[in-house]
Image (cartoon, rainbow, N blue to C red; front, side):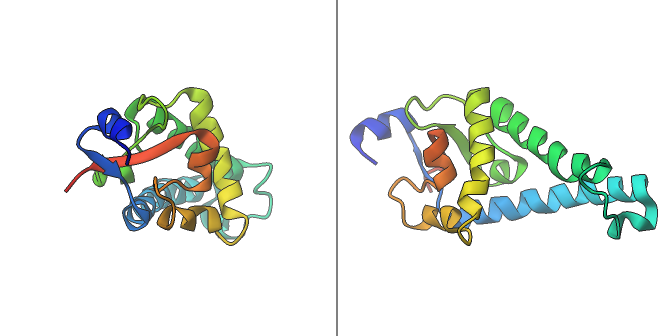
Length: 148
């Protein structure tokens, strides 16, 4: 971090690849714990065999709800539950402020860009000086956590 960035983020450091991977796994488990019972509530035992996912509740439960929840957590808490566990925050890279709604939406949609080439955009966090994935670079965000 440069001196100017240290002033902006104070006693924080950029959250690295493994911390962010752990937070992502926590978020995935939480999403599965919420979405799986909902899918069984809507479809019963057929939830595993539904082939109309694009038109029905599958799409809403599996894709729309996580999108909305993630964006709302970023906007109002600056972190998803997994990032809260590791005490990380997703902030605007220029100002250190909370994300705007536009930034949060762009960051979420940019996940797909990070994922397409074999997840290279996520692995980029391991090599980048500011620990930014491609989705962070596209949305102008950083993930920080307290220094140890």
